[in-house]
Image 1 (tube, helix red, strand yellow):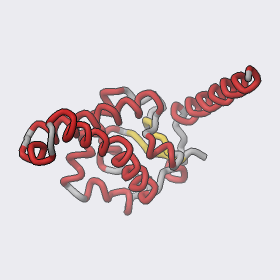
Image 2 (image 1 turned 90 degrees about the horizontal axis):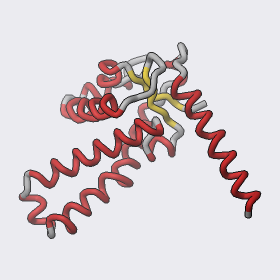
Image 3 (image 1 turned 120 degrees about the vertical axis):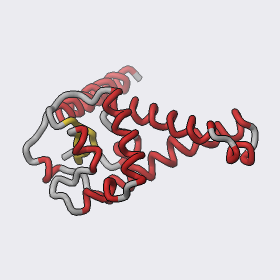
Image 4 (image 1 turned 180 degrees about the horizontal axis):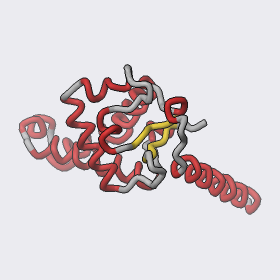
Length: 163
């Protein structure tokens, strides 16, 4: 039992050290390590199902009471989106990846090599929502060599695949 606990702590420590090395070190060959558009979409879908859907379910049936009142409410969907943004921002701040990004070994890094702050991650989420309404902002990785979205360009961040 003790042996397993030691091994688990060692694996966790090595994993965290590797994450810190990858997420805090900016590489020049970011275009080579950049996450593909398909990987990012798949990661986003996983995040929606693992984080956003439970939030909506909780708000709809526990807080508000039923789906009809939720649909008629202005505050329900707004609170759901903001709560989702806060949770995503916390994941990106502390782990540099969300559950969806972790499934595809993707990391969010800053171009200057510093750690992503909560404020930066939340502003990135807000810009994600805005660029979602301007479709070109989300689709920009399809024709850019560095595969950055509009909000990645504005905030100087990159989503990279862990090698």
